[in-house]
Length: 399
Ligand SMILES: *Cc1c(COP(=O)(O)O)cnc(C)c1O
Image 1 (cartoon, protein in one colour):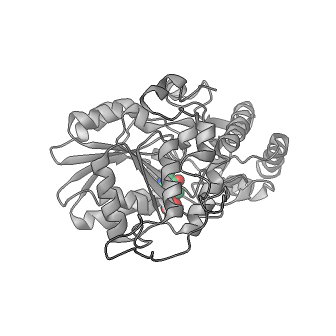
Image 2 (image 1 turned 45 degrees about the vertical axis):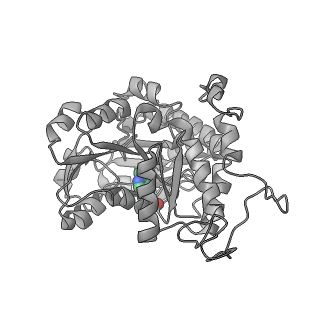
Image 3 (image 1 turned 90 degrees about the vertical axis):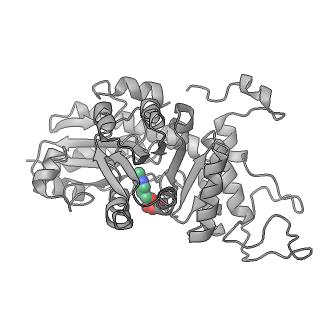
């Protein structure tokens, strides 16, 4: 495991620089001064008493600020190695806040395989506000360059992408954006800051669906933005307060509970995913395995540089028809048939009939989303139970 925050970085700060695993548990969270409570309390309050008119003690109203939310926001900022964090009601609310920075006439470039909800927000909401979008293969830097126009203000990047686990080069894409005075935002939901910290590679904004690995237990919906840029953070705060899609203190508490175990969960997610990817690659009924940790992955080298490990998401192509594949995902027992990802429990889905069913078949096939494609979110169960489950389901479903 690479060390992310070597002691040398302590020189500028009075505090001893701490490593990631310690920050997951302590950053942003001081024991309560009055009671010693080691966990930040859930501040279930809408308003705060003032000592005199305009003399608040740091909080006025909970849409604007709440101490439980502050603890989470500081925690997330520390994990991404950023200065400022903001928590929102969902990942989509966080992404929406980035779009709030733009004005009508502006142009955005995004990956052609971005999260479906992101694609929908861009095309079905913001095109009506006279923003324009180009969806391109962001692994092809010439295509990104060609898509840039004078109105381009934002480059939206995911890595690894869904469901084919393409790996995008954050440093190069940030440079391309900056050469044209545009911002580069990275949706870091799949990797989490334990594996990849986009700000270190030059990105301006990191966005998260906290619903996934950061929450980690499939029991809460939330989102976040992190940046080093104070001006951007002020704008995020303005829109957070003006739009009002803030994360409530109960949800903040649950996410803080999740981030404490992020590193140990991710270690197991990654270990299980790597083992399954290796074994699937050797299985006679499996054609292709998409996992950045496999040497056969076209961007394995880049992934090795950019990420500390390769994540818990694996996709693979069964040598099977659309019906056989639908049977396969229904036959698993430990893997639950469900969309979403990032929880401790393993999930399985068939993009052709589930997450990507709305794409016309020909277009879907051209995008590499074949009938036999299966996506798994590998949980932290015992690896042999996961493998037994996949083997028995292939035997039951594939002729
Ligand atoms: C789930 C997800 C989102 C949206 O987050 P919500 O919390 O569901 O609103 C955005 N990006 C990625 C990559 C996701 O997986």
